Length: 232
Image: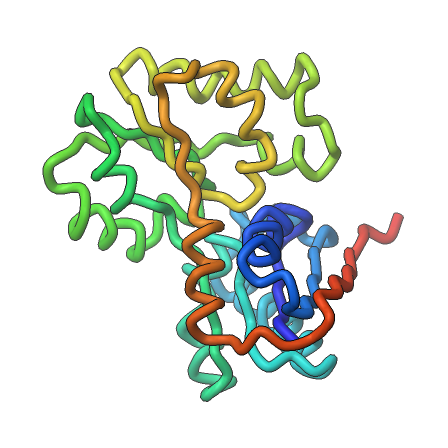
């Protein structure tokens, strides 16, 4: 069984890609809506939250884990791998490399959380893959909360999208990286806003391919969900 967790429901966009590639793989998913979003939290707090979700999934029979959260990957992946070795643990990172290859204008926009954008891992991705392109970043406050609330195309959400995306388009970006697993849930309104000539890229499919390399496809294709809610 594959265990997957995220700070809420965003990681289900990754689960969807895994199920497309590995339809017989049994998956258990935890959405930590109690503490969503993870972005503003400290690295140590995110690690402790990630450790708790990992322990729960492994206690349920998980043989591998996906950290379906860019922010948690930055804060916790290396420590979780050391703690749970040799359990395979697969994380997320913004798709800078494919975006740099896809852009024709030489300008890409990255929509992600503050925790991801300020991380050393993100800086390393820019150093390795974005030397020949201009990378513009937006931290997109309110996007995660909109997805958690199911407000995908309300006037308020559309205003939030325009506020962050229009400056990227004005600066010439023709490729946008959805660098948070919640953001692909907003793909439809984002694509409508940017038009057909702007490419949207996320890493869900790449993570699914990595799962296929590391995890045997066993089980009945069942998906079990646990969403941790705020207690008020």
